[in-house]
View 1 (cartoon, rainbow over the protein chains, first blue to last red):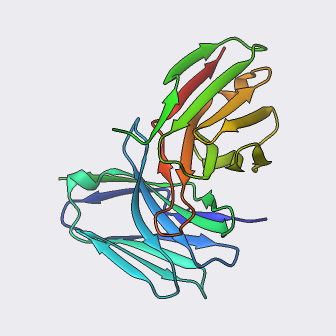
View 2: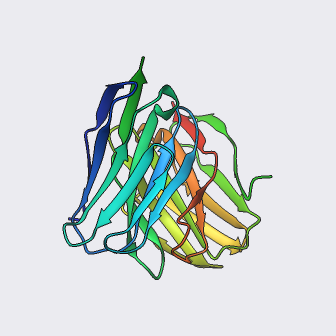
Length: 112
Length: 113
């Protein structure tokens, strides 16, 4: 069964701290996406990772992809309250149809 | 100036009634998707379309049907709504270039009572 697992599911962290969210998947894929969702809102694209070793950074967030380990990480540096949201990884399982399988999400709460 | 819109945004319906959700895009993308979002499950694919009149099932398609008669519109129908179909439904579009992933609609919150 195809699985995309994220951990932790919930993360409460203090402002200024660093942390990493992990996304493990069970099938071969070279395309992985990260999305952010604010409460009651839609999903917003954060990162597109298209090859083994890909690394993308935007502000305090950095995403990486290791296709051999079937693992992607989303690293948070010096967290701020504005990063509070739910983060989803999604794996492209069919490049012809662009079908994405989503992880269950990581709810991040940053407190002062 | 959203390239993808969903309607309605909210709906309450009774068990056993048919319900149709609409997704409209102005991007001329070939690929369109319907997902449902439930706590603890992330987003799960219901149906998707890879062109006009070309659709296929996703992982949770039972109780749902779709139609795409025009590039810009993708309709999701619950033939006979059940309480287990209470959820938030998201439509997404993709150019399938691999470079951008999906663009999501704003979602439809459906409650079946």
